[in-house]
Length: 259
Image (cartoon, rainbow, N blue to C red; front, side, top):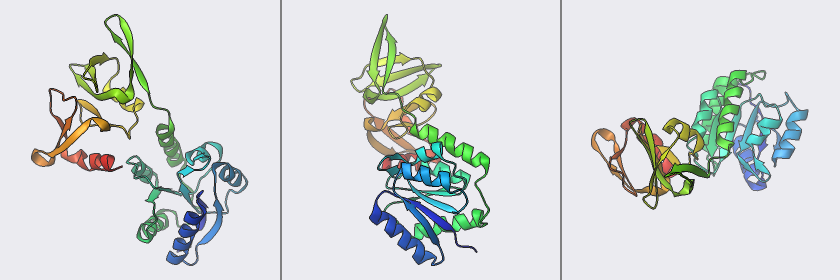
């Protein structure tokens, strides 16, 4: 099993040194090729160095931006393990592409697991991420970094009313009509489907509870256990129908609430 040549992208010098120390403790033969502290320096380095590394540990939030911007300006074909202090529920999607993530503060056991995954899929020095995986990753990055709607212009009684997204408690659909309820208990019809709204709303703030509801984190008053492993969500203002989370979606909901 060949030890990888590693690039660390981390803007906090002490954190970068700690990660390098943990990697060396796990595998003394790991070669730390370079530690890069910013988006701009990373873009420059990857533009000039294509095949002298095997694995990248990449912090998501850097001093001069988010590391996702590196992918837009430089070609990275080797496996990437993202590092973040935030347990963002969207990050597990990267695992589908043979890409992993670890949480700060770094844990030796978690880093060991990530390295074992690297060795399982990318142990060869010549191994690259498949082009399809790169394309999928960039698509996911685009979804994570695009701006989300800050307000909706709603048609109401021969008027157009601007409603700030932060003041929307929930969205509800019935009979192919989508309603939105504001935190001050005003209800409007909105000209989007729930599927379209999912693409426009910040996923850290809004959650698709089921086929009928998208709920705002700030509107959740209580979470109660319900029949058959489901959860019943009490939101304010309270809708006429009970908001239920299916048993299959409970882990995702808990992860979202804990993020």
